[in-house]
Image (cartoon, rainbow, N blue to C red; front, top):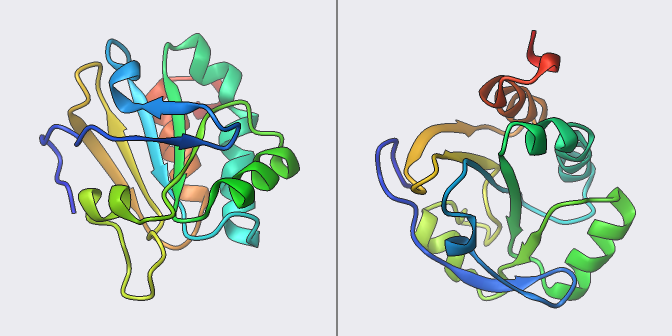
Length: 149
């Protein structure tokens, strides 16, 4: 898995809306890059809705949010619609992105890992664990939003 201080690997993938997404497009501002195991599962929906709830605060602080799972584009599209996600969610059906970031589990799913990237896409902090709430709390704290206080 990537470590704090490393530059996040570039990736290019298909977002839930069918558009192309490139990590390079986020350069110049902080990024919350979170990997989750399964679109439309209970824990992943809680996590995604948490990020969506605080998205206006993240935007106000200049922080982007990007989600990635090994689901296909159709599953990601349903997930975005169901959870009302205002940020890009990238389908990693071939698991290449998850492998590059070192988050692919032995079961073939991405582990729940959130990478906090600076404006140059350097990893500044990592949140890891099964429970979705600490990932969102760390993101709120990092963005310095009012909800973090």
